[in-house]
Amino acid sequence: MPHIELEITPDTNIRELVAQLPVAAQVMEAFGLGCSGCGVSRSETVAQGALAHGLRVEPILAALTQARLSGFVPLISNEDRRPLRRAPGEFRGRAKIAHVVAIMSGKGGVGKSLVTALIALGLRRQHLRVGILDADITGPSIPKLFGLRTPLTIEADPNAKTPQGHPQPLMLPAVTRSAIEVVSSNLLTDKEDTAMIWRGPILTGVIRQFYEQVLWSDLDFLLIDLPPGTSDAPLTVLQSMSLDGVVLVTMPQALATMIVRKAANLVHQLKKPVLGVVENMSYFVAPDTGTTYEIFGPSYANRVAELAQAPLLARIPIDPAKALFADEGRVEEIDDPVCDELATQLLAAIAAHPKPKETISII
Ligand code: ADP
Image (cartoon, rainbow, N blue to C red; front, side, top):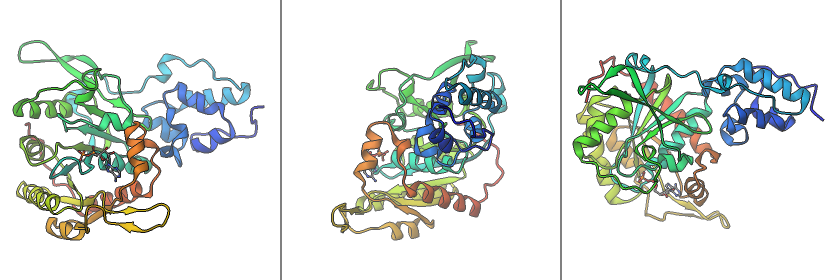
């Protein structure tokens, strides 16, 4: 029997609503808000959910109220479920992106992409609007972490032409269950395992396109998952975007530490702040005994942070549960305080380094 007492307002918590009125989950699903069951929406209200997904809240409230009375999901018009995204052509005005933060590592395999995803989750849980630009073009793993498979929609910009006179392509970002916008080279083809050969200048061109020729929504944060190392592509991004700064991801290995130091020097040479250091795979806590093991050796986190002249944002242990969620494309179900810790620390670091007003130069 539907629960008649329940008041449904823009401030109603989605989680609590679904717990009391299970059909509400189907209504949210019908609007493309399939996150009602996952950890991200723990404190999210209907209004915040609608805003994050770019939808108007009124039709959602109306549908929820109808479902409460009838027990069924009502018919929802296509118009009501279509996000209020910016129209092509508005693009030149550029989305308003308040903060751009690049996530960098000295070498591959230290968990840079997973850390990027955890930061994004933490920021979303503070109800901030977040996008991830997967600039790791040759090893893109962001879509896999979020279970995104559908190739990006590409439209022709009616107001812009390429130098050859062709319509300028515009990409619509993919949107995860918790409304994080994602653009990645892995979403340019429907074959996940297609190896793409990109050479330096093309790489930087693609990263530029991902920034400029995408209909990003207005965002509080755009996180850029940089390719590992200090090659051309990360350099170009660092030089040419209006970055707030860089987060360095490392792990407890002498080699990783040495390389991350090189990365920190590079960032400083380019006069961008290192906002913080994250030591991933720092240690392992045995679930049966609670004993802590330093699998890769002793932590260098404080030393690296000191060398990078930046705060240590977090030490993240080796956690098979996180690896499993990541592998299965369910990273948004990771419900770990480290996400909040990363987000809170990053916000504090950004507040300590106000971004100088600069014009965005083109790559
Ligand atoms: P990178 O982007 O630096 O190349 P990834 O984020 O792709 O690294 O991580 C490499 C692998 O390690 C992935 O399979 C990921 O799930 C796993 N991994 C990363 N961090 C952790 C962690 N803290 N605990 C367990 N597995 C992790």
